[in-house]
Image (cartoon, rainbow, N blue to C red; front, side, top):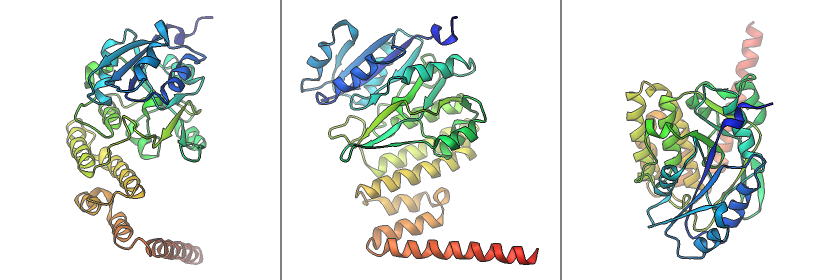
Amino acid sequence: MKNDRDDIRISAVMPAYNCEKYISRALDSILKQSRPADEIIVIDDGSTDRTGEIVQGYGDKVKYILQENTGAGAARNRGIEEASCEWIAFLDSDDEWLDDNLKLLTGVVGGNKNLVWAFGNFLNCDCDTQTRKEAHDIQKAEIMLDEREYFNNFLDCFMEGFHAWTGSIIIRRDVFNDVGLFMLDQHRAEDTDMWLRIAYKYQQVGYAKEPMAIYHREVAGSLTKSYRNFHIISDMIDKHLKLSAESGHGEEFVLCGGHMLSVWIRDMLSAGHTEGLLETVKRYEDILGWRFKKEMWLRVKHPRIAPFCLGVTSCIKKCVRSVTKILRFNKG
């Protein structure tokens, strides 16, 4: 019996730059899909190593395009423009798909004609220890989905920790005609910038809760993981405070943006990037909250005693909550 997913044609788009060490792993993971991609396009963003030679070794299984080095966003845009299929799926050259990635995603969009995009769960892999952990809480996803295969509002699910990632997403090609391509001046979080722009026009987003890809964190020389700058983060937040307000989603983004910003700031702090951190926190204290501001000040100014102080504060809060519950019970 023919399934709706059988009518879906997918172009797999991969930006690549000096990734001779990893690109075979990425390409092989696409070629091993239980539901094959209809075409594979690799945009070589001016590599100076053996990346091009390795890709061309796959012959007509892969469409290889070489361009000058202009960044991951430009490479993805070129891939979208070259794609011949109705749907686009992305994979970076240092990550990999699990075997059922496309099968799961096409199952979601094929069974829900209202959807123009979908994403799914994935595994975070620490490249030093090779430990893997699911990015999303499956039980929480089941509760939020309530037997559906989509979230009603991307901003809401993002707030709950369901972050879309480039390697586990599929988007109908004509969506890019509505929202534009990846921003060339967005050197960090250009993917999140895209998802938000899509969400302002298409709130519903499909979701598959099973892990479908592996995100290899902190790969040396990565094309998309090398920019850490608080000015870039500030520009991103300012841009979407404006765009969300213009599209009628301003209040939703304030909550979403605060969550997103706190995650990025913690990520920068854990990587040892503190220059400009406190200034950024102060600039956005209205959406981050005073507790986060105090915590960051403590972690930057007094890193040695911060864990102890924060631990004591947490303990006091728990005691206060417990006492409050007891008083309310006795009063009742």
